[in-house]
Image (cartoon, rainbow, N blue to C red; front, side, top):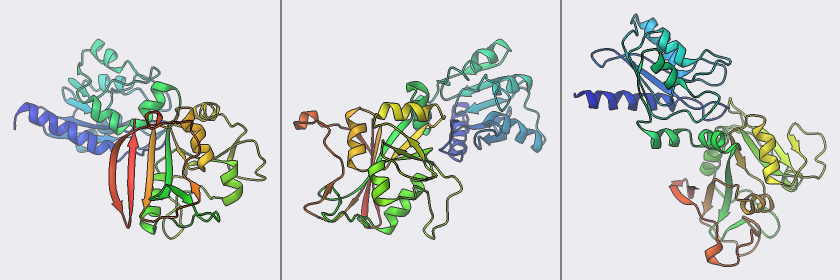
Length: 331
């Protein structure tokens, strides 16, 4: 195996580890691998979530447990080591103190609060090679990168509809347009986001639980923040109530709570409001092979008067889920 092949293999392993990190929460998903002089892995780790050791520190600790000294080693990480002391120590300082020889990272940290790790490492005699796999690193942390660089949460609109775009029948019934496999899939996706948002109309009409549940009704370990937006009174509720019809204001409030990824599950009125504001970054559609011919549309009026004015996204995923089709599209 050549040096280039060994380097690529180590970085691939770091990305594989990073995918074990939770998708939810204020921090990015990060994986790290440390290799010795012969290219073999002597330590590895990934971030388990806010308040826990970052991937680089976890990898250093793993190397120590294995009986290896990281001095002179090469570190491969999916994100530039942080240079910020918060609930955990700065990774750049931990690596410098461990006297590693080289750090290879896939993406420069876009967070101004935590960036600067490469500069610190270079200043302390550690070679750094950065931005070696930017596209893959952004794809790994799409919602987080968007939230950090734009100042607002990443917004995913989730819809379930018939082939003719109906979210409910004329009598208002909508359970169940899609099958059990699609519902299981949707709940798994709920468990990966920071907040679920609905409008007061949907909340009062359906009283949704807004939880991420297994098929037997038990809850996923992580539960998203439940948010209801609008001006109508919803009575006593464990949901966060945001007294506004303005999508930008809703996202401003949630950004202040370190919410990075919002799942929009309200009805057509709320979906249309976010669409008109240009605040939908991704669409998740569960499409059932059924026709209603009439009933409630999936999205309300967004102001498009011609095909040229349609809002468009790029298709990322199309797959069969039970008897339904799941489509993911994004910017």
